[in-house]
Length: 128
Image (cartoon, rainbow, N blue to C red):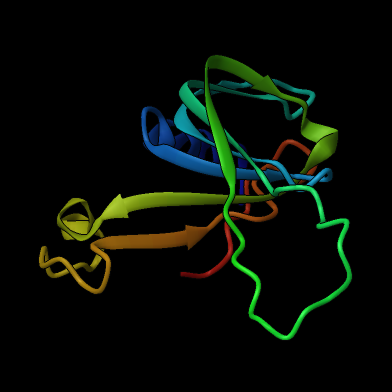
C-alpha cells in the first residue's frame, strides 16, 4: 500500500472504536484519535481490561469462570512496540459503502482485524 492509500486508510479509522491488545494481555477499547511515526496509538474514552490473576487454589472439577476486570482510563497512549493486535469495531450499518448490507448481523458488530496496522509506517490491513 503506498503512502496516499495508507493516509486515506488511517483517516477512515479516525473516531472509530479500536480494541488493542498488548503484550501483557491487557486490552484497551476506545476511540482512535491519532498515531505517530513510532506506531504509538492514542485512544480517547478508553476502558482498560485485564485478565484476573490465576487462582491460588488447586484445580477443581467445576468449570472456571473468567471475568475480565475493567476500569475507565480516558485518554491513553498505547506504545507501539507493545501492541500485539488491533481490531476495528463497526456496526454493520456503518459498512454500507464498504459492501455491507446495512443490517445488523450477529452481535451487530463487524470486526475487521487490523494486525499489521502500520508495519514500517505503511498500513496494510488484513483482508476482512
